[in-house]
Image (cartoon, rainbow, N blue to C red; front, side, top):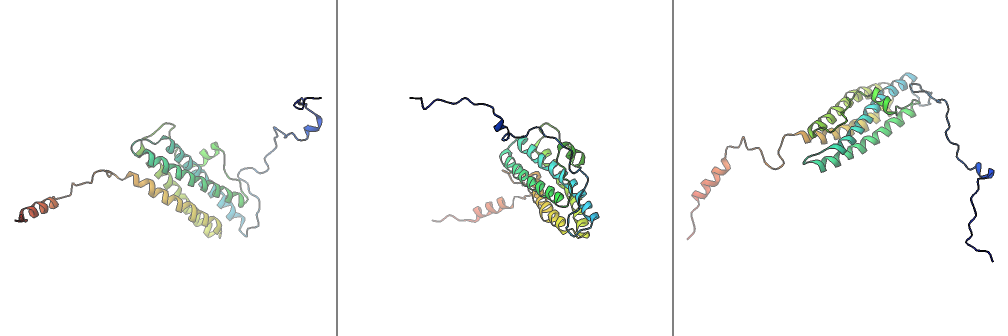
Length: 224
């Protein structure tokens, strides 16, 4: 009687070759960066071209800001580490969502979205951050400045899109990019207010409360 647990040696066969993935494939680009094909959207070619150009600049800045938030998330420090660690990561996630929406809009218009790090670095107008850790106020100031760089260009791009009847791009920029960046700017900039979390500023206080308290104690007669 044969042993039922006997194993069969594995063999490479010609029949199995058809199931093997085709590896190491190469080809020419099917569409070069900076080109566009026509899409039946009812928009003038010049309008689509302008929107794609503007969106790619905004995409590069958004990718840069997204990565700046992740850098700050990792490298923040000090008494507010926990709060900022979580806030920066939340903002990173929101910026990552914007990256996807902007890139898809570019593709929808028939263009090619910027994607690789070297191309993003060349196109973005946000100054590069150092590789090392910065103090928290500097981290936050850098983030706020990056947001402002985006605001200045996005508002111009939104107006151009609206003037060309590209309301899809206008809506994306106003409803998503601008509003998200406005909220994030508010949240991070409040961390730059010079107020102590444990002691109120009493420099303008005239001591009237203490005076009233003293007078009250003086005027109050003890009960018999």
